[in-house]
Image 1 (tube, rainbow, N blue to C red):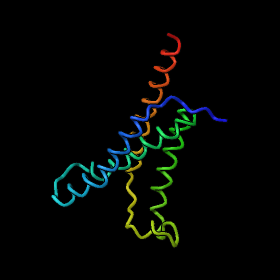
Image 2: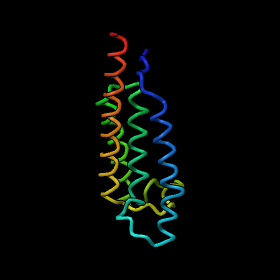
Image 3: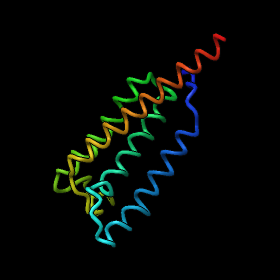
Image 4: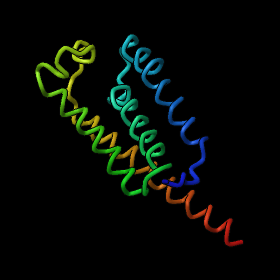
Length: 131
């Protein structure tokens, strides 16, 4: 049986809420207002999604494996958007998805920041147990 790691649920909550806000509030507001936010509205959801996945996976995997799994999932999702048919006969293929290499960069950065958070939380947990 895999032992659950001591990752604080507050980080999961924060990344989930910020991801939803970025996708459902920030992006539509920027697009409708025509403000140039240097592309942040396009990449922030991927950043927070990758951060969330890394934190979630790190609860049951080694942190480096969680980082790799999160980045791999995001890269595969982005690369699938290069296919003209996407997921055949699936709702996702009709959502107007567009491949953007900056989404991959955002995912790698988000996952890496979460990896650092996980490593610090594990270190803090070990120090607390040793004290």
